[in-house]
Length: 162
Image (tube, rainbow, N blue to C red):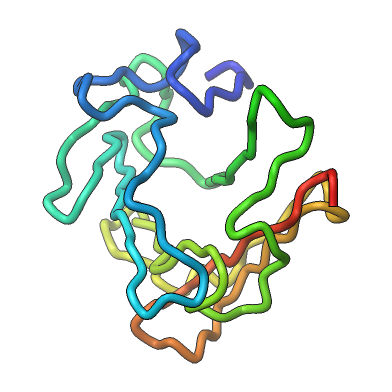
């Protein structure tokens, strides 16, 4: 919307929340433990609506007046670490990722819905970016040995105070 970036719920150019019980920016609990046999996950979907969970509950939407067309040719997503008490907190499990689902923080099954409503599950044309490679690392991993995971993005790092 006019070149502004809105990654949370605190600006007037972004998503309109329709569920107060799912505040944007909330912590996802329970949290997985590094190396544990069981890991916890959440499912998200974005198709003008922000959907959460395996039942695709609608959490919020982007109003049509923000868009000049019904589809796009460029998609951007990412994450940010923040704490009010530290200048550079840990991300993920606090270590640099080494491309293993059991030991790294990750996003799996990354896919894009094209203008013909077909899912591109490979998404093999992405560019990675990090503005602090000393404290954080992101690995875009298309050819995973974990086939059920699909396209995986691993992330983590000790932060600025490592």
